[in-house]
Length: 194
Image 1 (cartoon, rainbow, N blue to C red):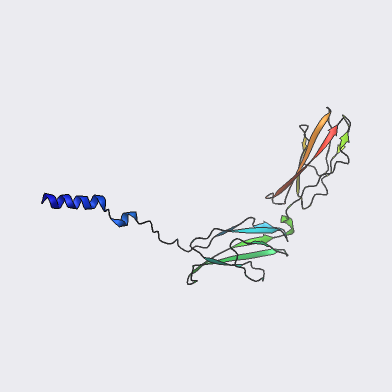
Image 2 (cartoon, rainbow, N blue to C red):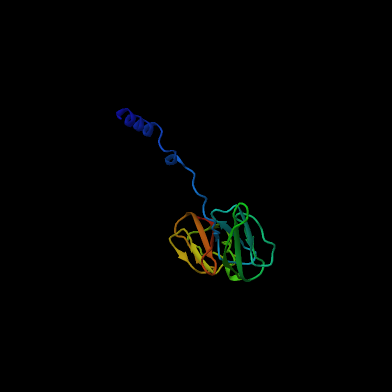
């Protein structure tokens, strides 16, 4: 009886249940999911649709503007006309016997163009105390302006002026914002004060 018990213990010790070491996992459930880089854009502005689906092997995108559906994983797309578009993603399993869909809206309007900051200072070298005219009016699709003149002064005007009390090189920076302030663009220019 003792030999039988000893043999049983040896078997358990040296030959554990194989199921304990089974690392096979069940497949992920099929779930369509995506996130756009922006939900409000200007006509012609690109938007990236990042695919976060699970359990899927192939995809079909319908951008809601009458164009042909595409099968990319995470496409980049742009719309030519102002409107509200419903974007539909269909995710399929390996043999396409199952699918899942998800959709959301993209608003396209000229108010949401990506801005581009442009600076002009009508020169690069100025005298101490001289008025420096800064022009931001050539910026594209800008609704709000934020200037930093590098001398401790700032402005929210489109075309502000500033001056410098000490010689040196200063960096003027302009940041412009879209209408909804979700996008911005920054540029800078150096001026020398004698």
